[in-house]
Amino acid sequence: GENVEQHPSTLSVQEGDSAVIKCTYSDSASNYFPWYKQELGKRPQLIIDIRSNVGEKKDQRIAVTLNKTAKHFSLHITETQPEDSAVYFCAADEFNTGGFKTIFGAGTRLFVKA
Amino acid sequence: GAGVSQSPRYKVAKRGQDVALRCDPISGHVSLFWYQQALGQGPEFLTYFQNEAQLDKSGLPSDRFFAERPEGSVSTLKIQRTQQEDSAVYLCASSLKGQNTEAFFGQGTRLTVV
Image (cartoon, rainbow over all chains, first blue to last red; front, top):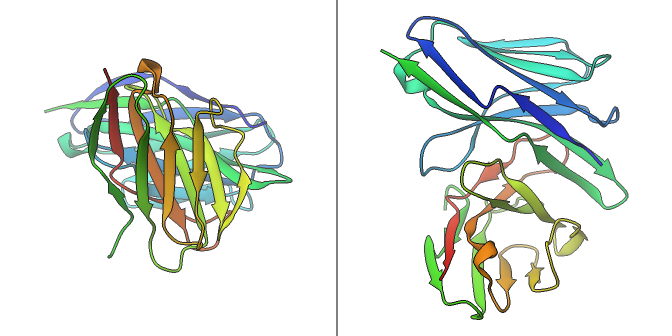
């Protein structure tokens, strides 16, 4: 089945700097890769997603890149702000005869220092 | 309601007690997922429903865990004879179509087994 690895587990940046979180996946059949942000005590919320027919997607200060050959994808946050501090999860959809499921990475705790 | 609703938000159970966790998905959402999130970890897949059909229950950790969605809407996750290792946040998510679409999460139920 699908295995999603995420690095780093913790990331601390200065306000205004960029943050990069990297993930790898194992199932070459996966073609949907969402990123979720989870603030302390709150539910995970989708911040951006990418499908396998594109290599990059951008939404204001966040962007995601996908390399299907290497089976890795990354989240880039530019001009970080204190409110970006949260746990970020990458994910990949796994397909099997039972349908599909979203497999999550272990998460990256991002600290943005003011 | 506007989002996925879970109840109770918090549950303290004595070891050996049975518990039932409820999920009200967004109206019209076909797919429903249950995840278990241990402290500091990413959500771990438990089970997946498409309408009333449980298509994948490969993530349920033991036969003490049981989930149902009898009318294709509300779902219940039941844990029998709870153990301390069952302590976690249980997240429910729903999506409109299924694969390659955004999953919306509930606030979760924090289960503590004492």
